[in-house]
Image (cartoon, rainbow, N blue to C red; front, side, top):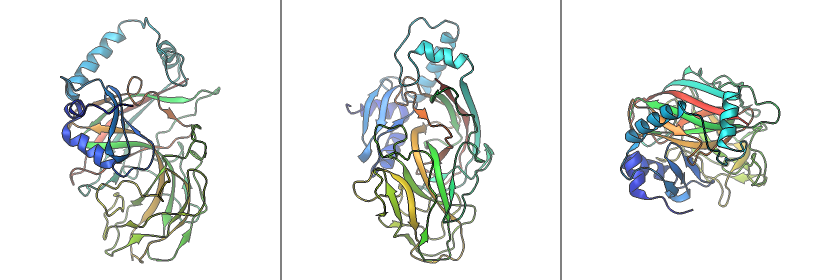
Length: 373
């Protein structure tokens, strides 16, 4: 796949947003992640490079394209679809997609999230905040933890498609109250609460129920699953600490892999990731690993008197840049790199504010749509 025209991407998203995405992917170990909402087929790759074609940005920026897109959608709403196009898995053509969507197989989820104040360059979780969906459920303590799914409080609730159909993302409109923020839409697979006032190792016996295959061609492949360390509703007491001697099973099913030591942050505030290095929204894995199936052991280098920490395993779905404050960022999941990406049965959809550009809390509202076929 050819490199993306840098000036076009800068013009469409804004140079700050493009650089933000690039920095966020610099040390990423998994497969490329789609950059949603960019007309064309643009993917963010390991090392911070972009690949694919941007069909906007030559003369129009995100605001111009959003207005033009609304105009096109209005015109198309008044005309029947005349030409079929070949689609990705789940749909034989655009006509088939439209037929399924209008035949009762469309799912719509609205949301409104009140973000928390953060630290510049550090990632915040939107899982624990409301208002809609409600604040997410905290995971159970080690060793069992919690395998999250669409019935978990905080998830976007839905009923799995029937009759062998699969669910695919088709569109979204997202508005942020603060400019140049970037969301990561992901499937929250598993969480386990860690005892903070202890430097002992803790076994983890629970495991996710999705993305557990070691076969790279399987939709359930574990490659790309990432680990992050969340601060819950109680901030950490001051104290230097590292997450060390944490063990996991990798995407190939190899057990007792050891995480490189991950620096925490003394006195970390609520809802942020306890990753001390700016820009680090995922925990590093052992050299050569591209995903994590489950955890076997967690450990902190020091006993921190108070605070709530939980380890999370997730699977990225797409980047959603929000370059303009209080203006709907339209995300097209059909004709862009987000091309009908599959949402697995039982998915627990959630969002991260990746490497916040400011300390200001941002609120997010919008709607996601998916179609089964």
